[in-house]
Length: 210
Image (tube, rainbow, N blue to C red; front, side):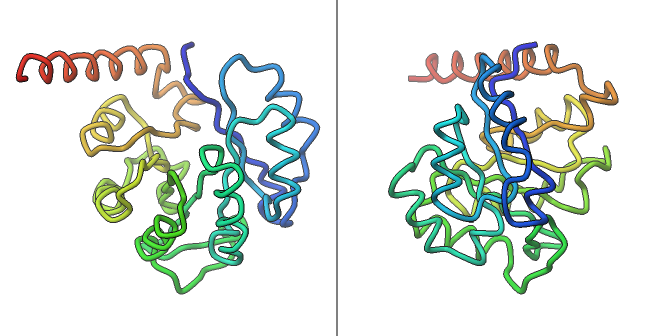
């Protein structure tokens, strides 16, 4: 249907602190003709290396960004463009270990720290919106984009093509669409076509101005 990338999370791994569905992840990554990014339970360099060697294009570090920033630094040094940090927040405060543990870190403060240590991009998820099919937390996403000064991929509450267009206008690098695909709220092929058209129109206007 034209998706540029597959976002895949090992939920068992996120809770238990280690990848629990490696064989399935490996088989999916090898079967796909588009890049695959994987998160959930990635807490050491050995797991990162194993996933990247299995065909995964990007690894997503979430809990490690809070509990073990030294791992994030080492991962960025070795695999920079293959590393993404996921900042998952509830009411602006970061939650870890599959969202079951709340921290005292604000999402924006963590984003600033991640930028300082060399993280190339961030996924920002509003936990309260995830899976609700309501709408993204646009104000929080805009604040994250402004604060991080990094490419930001938005997640949580995305339920319509209008939401995707709004995120594009806010400056999000991308968006993660999950439940809205299963329910049919978003037709992926149509959405990608319209978003790409919007981008092409902006590019054309930009060329005309210079």
